[in-house]
Amino acid sequence: MTKLHQFDVVVVGAGGAGLMAALYASRTAKTAVISKLYPTRSHTGTAQGGIGAALGNLEEDHPEWHTYDTVKGSDYLGDQDAIEFMCYEAPQAIIELEHMGLPFDRTPDGRISQRPFGGHTNNVTGKPVRRACHAADRTGHMILQTLYQQCLKNQVTFFDEFQVLDLILVNGRTAGVVAVELATGEFHTFHAKAVIFATGGHGRIFEVTSNAYSYTGDGAAIVLRRGLPLEDMEFFQFHPTGIYKLGILITEGVRGEGGVLINGLGERFMSKYAPTVKDLASRDVISRAIYTEIREGRGVNGQNYVWLDVRPESVNQYAAMDGRTNPDGSPYTVTGEQILTKLPDIIDFCRVYLGVDPLTEMMPVQPTAHYTMGGIPTNKYGEVVIDEKNTVLPGLYAAGECACVSVHGANRLGTNSLLDLVVFGKHAGLKAAEFAKHADFEALPAHPEEEVRAQLEALRNGSGRENAFEIGREMRKVMFEEVGIYRNERGMRFAIEKIHELKERYKHIRVRDTGRIFNTELLNAWELGNLLDVAEVVAESALNRTESRGGHSREDYPDRDDQNWLKHTLIWKRNGHTEISYKPVVITKYPPKERVY
Ligand SMILES: Cc1cc2nc3c(=O)[nH]c(=O)nc-3n(C[C@H](O)[C@H](O)[C@H](O)COP(=O)(O)OP(=O)(O)OC[C@H]3O[C@@H](n4cnc5c(N)ncnc54)[C@H](O)[C@@H]3O)c2cc1C
Image 1 (cartoon, rainbow, N blue to C red):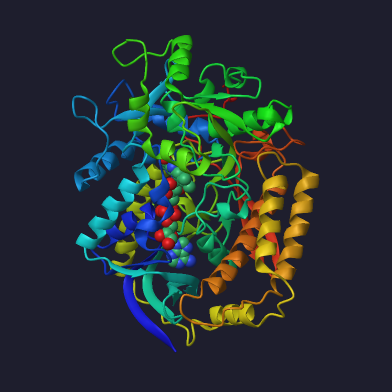
Image 2: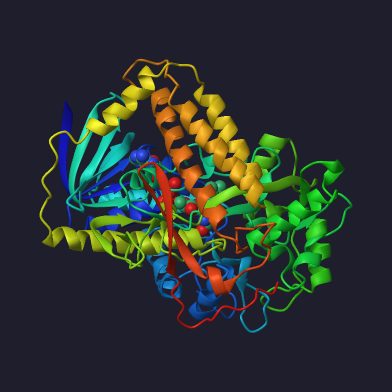
């Protein structure tokens, strides 16, 4: 038996994108949010550094500069119409969050404070511009809390700790989703006119990652299984500064406040790789630089890490060398107290997890798998599109990290994801509600839960010859090593074979917990199936793209190749095989240029 619910709009996911979508949909439509986590535990809550908008509160800035930086940062793979839309909506979106009560940090005269972030520049001078609005280093936490309060106020219905396992499509239209209630193990069918996926990313395919344990690509895998394509899955962002071995993120805000990267020889190596913006170059550039330093033996003590130095005396010394100034033209300096106020959580993480005090010691860092640029293809209204011609699937929407609009192209700029959630979450919500107003409910199939019931039964009744933990470990290792920061054909072929082997072995795992209540072992095993499916399409898409662009860096094809590869990948899973096709990039104002660092 399954329980049946009916809503106009069902949002899957309660992170920034899901809550923003729900907030807007609920203004005119009966709306539910289903979330496998309690909403405020969503990964959005861990976002530290800031949300980008050309408010120009501290110095001259324009949405047009933001647009250009984002296009350039995307290595020209982002769709320029969508990027422009996002960057021009940004200032208004920030003011709206402020009016909802988000406690942004302030300038002395009371305006929203902004800090520099990698890749965000003054387009005239090429120097970093202060564009990231922030609430200390807890910006995402504040966004999530603020939106959750607003949703409660708007009477959105929440199904917390319900995990969606399937999407119901009838006659090529959306009819709802099937979920399992974690507390009881019962299936629930949500009959809906419109469904919005906002399920976040899939960084858990990699060994070292900044992503939450819940980042298992559920939305992407479900969509793939339902015969829909995923876009640009080869593009995954490695953030340069994860805590060594743990992967926990050290925000770029640290470098925004003046922190610098130092190799094992004590050199500030970014001057070599990006002479103008140095430690504030794009993430892909810095990750590769760190990796190169390590590979060429300049890691600290021959290990796989370098230093991040935010000790006040170092910051002041490097700022003086760079001629960095405050907005009033005076030399830029910081005190330990100021660093502590601006980066309290980072200081805390390092003290707790490493026993290192960043005010007096350097932090050991290495690149960490951070952000999924690819995902469920959508247009700029959040409508899911399913082919090369951008045909819309009626009633299906996606927003946030699980979606590919595509505003981030081959590489996302810091602070642009939170912005993406707010802008495209809002429009997905509005569009879904508008669609629901005119659409009828599709008739549900007789037993919508049948397939997922069979999936879970298989996990309970496998031979038990194989061990899920071991399969997960091997997947994460091969993905990090062979489909990570640097890639080549031999390595990726090896990874794909390995994933195929792991998928076979996965059929033989058996979940030991036979209970129904909070059977997390069972759901983790189901999530592993998603990760394997997603890992496969990431590796296949990456192998097919014989060029280097943004986060996709091939040793065997080191150059960007606009002639052949200025296009988006679409990948399907059909009859057990992957199929790949391509669609053009939307270019409006900015023809591709070579990247200069
Ligand atoms: C450590 C860290 C720091 C970051 N810092 C920044 C930053 O400073 N600035 C910036 O712009 N970006 C930052 N990012 C990126 C940004 O925070 C994320 O991309 C963004 O928050 C993702 O939001 P989302 O709404 O798409 O997903 P999430 O916030 O992850 O929410 C996903 C939701 O989906 C639900 N869900 C998933 N699967 C299911 C399922 N099967 N059934 C039901 N519910 C499901 C989860 O319960 C959750 O509620 C950071 C990311 C990380 C990891």
